[in-house]
Image 1 (tube, rainbow, N blue to C red):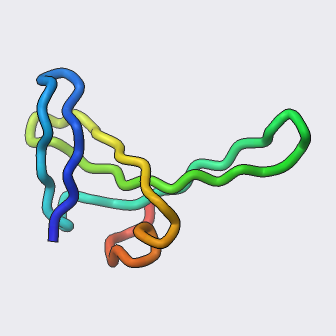
Image 2: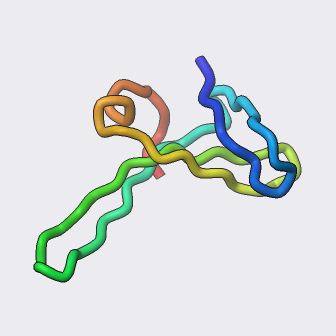
Image 3: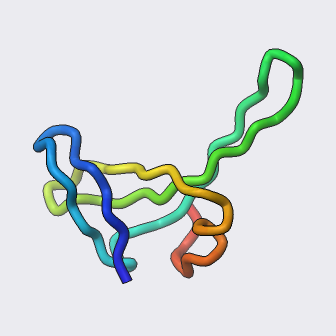
Length: 68
């Protein structure tokens, strides 16, 4: 399977295979003190640049790739 990312520098969509993808989560605290967690896939382009795509928790859990 693959995930489609947007390459900001070249302004086009790129598809990366599961072997080039990892998943990560970002947590932050809101003004009210609640913790918010966002889920994302991270990929590495052939020229060494990183790309990120935010996703839902269901998509994040379903993808079988290493956690960063």
